[in-house]
Each structure stands twice: as C-alpha cells, then as structure tokens.
Length: 135
Image (cartoon, rainbow, N blue to C red; front, side, top):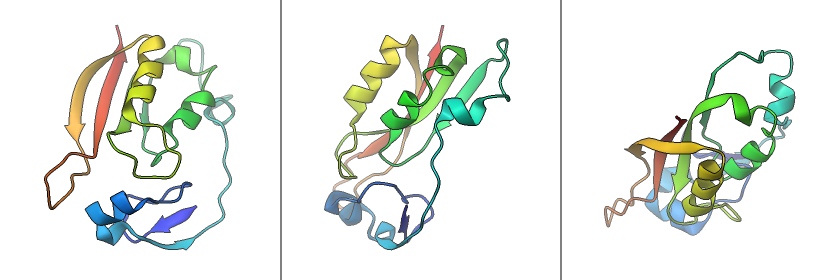
C-alpha cells in the first residue's frame, strides 16, 4: 500500500502527477504491506440472504477490483456510494464511465452526487462520489 501524506489518498496504485498537482499534501511518503481479501470472502458468514446492504467504496482507483470480488454479494447490495474519477489520478485506474457502466448493468441508478477532489488552481472537478441505488 502506498501511504499518502494526507489521510485520504493512500492507494494500492501508483499516484499520478495530476493528483499531486491537485493536492500536493497527498504525495506518497512511504509504503506498507497489507493483506487483500475479496468482498465475497470477507462477507461470508456475516450476510444472510435477507440482508439489504449499502456499500461504500473508497479505494483510490481500485473500485472495479472491489466489484469483481463482490459477484456473490452484489445482488444483495441495494445502494452503493463510490468515488468516481473524471481524470486519471492513479496509474491504471478505471475512470467513471467504465465503472458507471458496470453499476448500471447491475441494476443501479444514480440518486445523488457529492463533489470530491477539485483542482485548486482551475476549480476543475477531478473526482466525485456517486450514490447509486437499485429501484
């Protein structure tokens, strides 16, 4: 795990210059070894068939990998809040349109948007949180 200088930008992925320019305090200051577990495996034994789940995904560029590891859990998820990037901020990250497509194909609709990271010098929105729900 790449450890960021702020409390919100640590990621498994290398950070791009576009991110550092927008938030200089986010530059990586170190690394740490972490263990990864797929959501399906992490939830096994905790979720019953009747549970209705709201999932918040804030994983700095590896959102699609989280969804790939939630194939069994996804049908029970009725709402998701996920960080969506409009421009690449991490190496090899999937941008909002691909992630959006994945969520819509799984029955989710947009309910709300919360602005996120904004480029200070231009005011350009770089990331936002989308709240999507199944209806």
